[in-house]
Image (cartoon, rainbow, N blue to C red; front, side):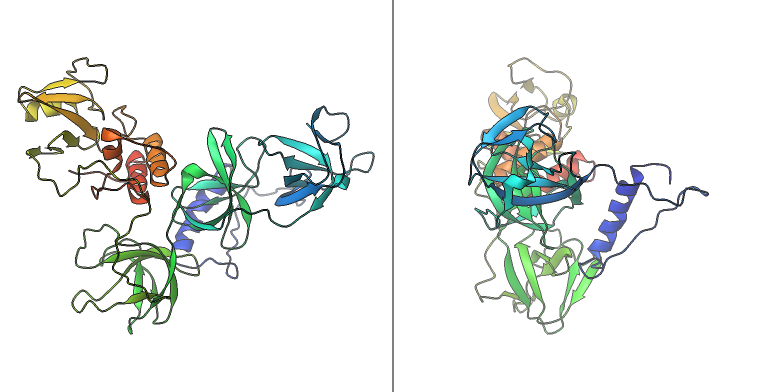
Length: 432
C-alpha cells in the first residue's frame, strides 16, 4: 500500500458492503490488515499530536478563567469565562507543559475554539435540548465538535444511518452550515452539518407474517435480499409508502437492530393482511411524508397538454428532464420562444428552471426537475437545498419548489433530495 488516502477510501467501501449484509455491530467487528513494503521498521510510528479526542460538556470552576488561543500562558487571550459557564470540550491534553498544566481544547458558544487549563474545568452531564430521530442523507464526516475548522473527524457515517439529535440551535453558522450534536447507535456523540441529515418519523414495528420477511436492498421483489427476519422481529420503520416500480406491493423502509437498512413489504397484496404492525397497533395504511413542504401543484396526476421525449407541457409549466437543451425543445415544439431569467432570448444551451417559453401565444415557466437553483445543471447544491426544504430549513417557491419534487407526488421529501444527489453523482436518471 503506497497511497496514504486509500486506507480510508477503500476500507470505507468494503465496510459499507459488510454493513449492508449485517456483519458489523458492536460485538462483531472486522480488522483489516493492509500490506506494506518489506523490511519496514518494526517500531510503529507514534500517532501525531498529544490529545485525546472527546465530545463532552464541562463547566468553569471559578471566575475570570482565561481562554487562550494555544496551549500555555504565553498565548494570547481569546476571552474570559466565569464560574458556572458551560462549554464544550473536544480534546483532552495528554502531555503536561513545563508548569505541569494540561491544556484542553474547548468550543465557545459562538463556535470559536480555544484552550483552558484543566484545573479550571469539571465534567458535567450532557446538556441536551432535543431527542429526535434523524436519517443521514449523504455520506458525511462525524466530528468531535461543531464546524470544520479546529475539529477532528471521528469517522464517516453513511447514507440511511439513523442518528439521534440531542442538541440543536446552538451553532447556527459555522463554515456556512448549522451543526447539530448527534448520538450514534453505539452511544458515540459528535457533530454533523444539518445539510446531511433530515428528520424522520421513525417508529418501532414488529414482523407479524408467520413466514417472516425479507429485507431487500431496493423496494422491489427482484432486488437482493440483505437479511431474512423471522416473525416477532422488531424493526424501525423510517419511511412509509416508498415509491417503487414494483407496484404490486406496498413498500416501507426499515432498519434492523444490527444497522441493516432496506425495504420490506407491508402487507399481503391479495388479502391485505398486515405483515408488519406498529408496536402500538396503530393503522399502518397512512401515507408517508417527512416534510411539510408542498410542491405548488404540478404533480403526476395532471394531464399534460403536450408531451414528448423528456418533457411535458402542463397548464402553467413546462416540466422537463435535466440537461434538456434549447435545441431539443425547439425541434419538439416548433415556433416556440425561449427566454432566460433576464428575458433574453435563448437559442442554445441547457434549459434552466425559472426560464420562460412562449408557445401558441401562451407563456409557461420552465421546470427542470432537480435544477433547483436555476443554473441548468443538477448538482450537490441542488440536493442540499432540496434536503433543507424537506426539513423546513429552506424556503422554495414556484418553479423552484416544483423542480425539487422530482418524483411528482406533490411533496418535497428526503426521497427527492436523495434522488437529486444521485443524479448529481451520475447514478440516477430522471425520466418524464
